[in-house]
Length: 584
Image (tube, rainbow, N blue to C red; front, side, top):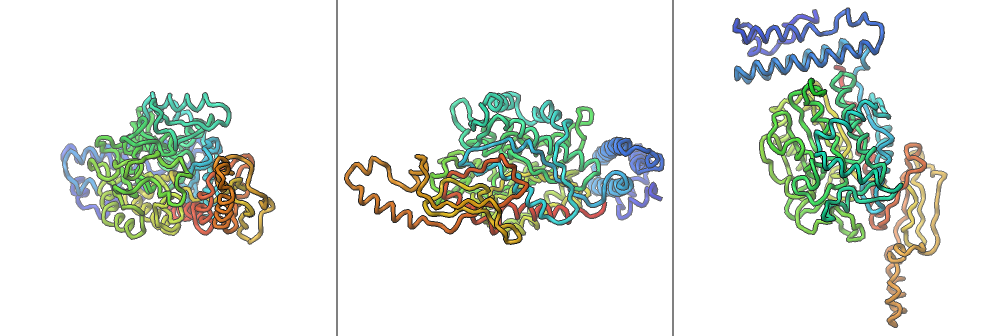
């Protein structure tokens, strides 16, 4: 009998004992449990003819489940019976799973992962020296389509969630003055003119976070995708979801310079924080009414913006976990051979310390678990942190939803050069997070793209030394793309390109022209690289999407990512989400 209460109480001796009592609290709890079981799908719901009617009914019943589960937790918490509380949560999740399976015949297929994206995110353009490039979403989609498992792509965010984001949730996460400032900068920009979005009144903090007129729509679409993902998961349509959107968000706080950061680190609005606030907002305020949401940030940088919004002071609704590179002598990017050629590096911070600052070195209260791993994030250090610190903390918190800030910039070939992880490591990390979710919340995981910049050049670049060929990367069948560009000409004519390989004209006028030409010739010989290849993204790359990497040194660093990079990390991440999508 699906509505037999006792079947859900197996292995819960403390809760069974509490329910057997005749106290008013126990009677209320018993009525609550009976009410939970009674909303398991009945023949009356199945008799509804219209699929949309059924979906509408299930959404209502999921809300009832959330409310009744929370009421039971409050009753048991008043008794200070920790064992009964844990068992109540376990019992409720058993009902949720059974509840879900009862509706799957018309709600969704069992074991399905959602991919939620929107072409409006491609409206966000950045400068030619920025790591955070528009081609990241097409590259992510290439990795997603290489992933294995039951995956469904939702390629348009519903207008409902765009309106909810812009008119409500964004203003809960960010100060009104911050939102107005960013929106005004975007909307007053001239067409396709790249401007600093996060520059403060003193002219600081805008160098790494650039954008255009379309950046506001892109940022709103990214938040809308995360909100839609929360609803789809909590309504039982999917066990988990991944949002490949941009611009990223975990450095965007309530206002500029969150937690005294020098800049916004490519971030405009914060989709992860917005999703957490929406999930935990009371039903009376248009939210879902969840009691606890855990954010696990796997980006190589600390998510100062997310911590600022959710956990500036202790809030029992949130647990923020960040595993990142950190330490006194670590900056936000290891420039190495790039030098000042890549002048936009995170925050232009001359001070020692990892970007966005030293705020990720310590944990201010029990709602935050910051784990800095030194100058490079390695698989050994990451595994140790997961087993000894993250798992027990998350288990104790018992989240009802886990949101992942999915940054892939700790990969060994990422141009930031702060990590040593492989793509396979990201798959393993994802599986561990999903297992944590299955222990506490029936596997409910929402993942949102943050960093990860290891995408080779996707268009032929102009800033190459003489006699260097630039071709399309062969596809998986070993065939070259038809769009092959061979460059065997002299150095390009633009002044900035001349400076890359030639000396300044004024030096020729000093009478040492011959020596200069000799030096230039030798430098050119030393700089001759192996053939640079363009990553073939096929139909994923919009015809009108630019990809300009103005630093030749950065082009060379990105070239390593043909072998393994961002695309492979996304593939493994999504494949792991799909593997963990066991039938409900």
